Image 1 (cartoon, rainbow, N blue to C red):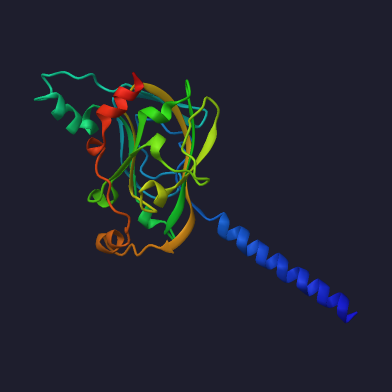
Image 2 (tube, one colour; image 1 turned 180 degrees about the vertical axis):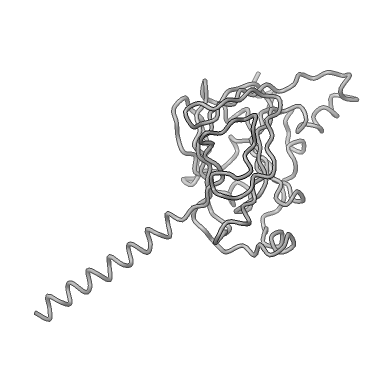
Length: 242
């Protein structure tokens, strides 16, 4: 009888450990899932229950399709009347690129933490859109991180390849050069393309964020800044598409 009870107790302890581990693995912080989202009418609160301060839908066409956002990026062509030179055009990349972006008060979420991964549910109209997109963050509007989508690093060590089928891109943030959380997030396009975005979320918490002030938040960002989109070699990216 004692042996039987010991077996049962051991099984219960193992179950508790596995349940705890599973719970830790499934902790995530939703950024947006675009349910019922009208690109022309910014909601005060996002699906995660916190404020969406602003959103950008520039140099593109967008609409909601069955709970996902279809984004038809249409970057502006170079016009010498708009810029002093071609170099000036590239320096102002954020102005002429197609730009979807949001500022979400992630710091207000309960238990908000720095996370290891960012998951983006995405598909493209033709496939290969990763070569035309840039992920761009500017947390607290004072630190700047940007990288071409094809240069991001996924959880398994590979690089993103967008297809015509829905898939979850699980991005290793530190390996990709990004801090583990942000309150401003963009996906920009330097060449025409069409994508659909569904759910975007952070997962695998690493450490709690001290969100008592912008100073404590910024102090927790130990990843070195990579710069703004205009600091990237966009001229080379465009040349590679030809």
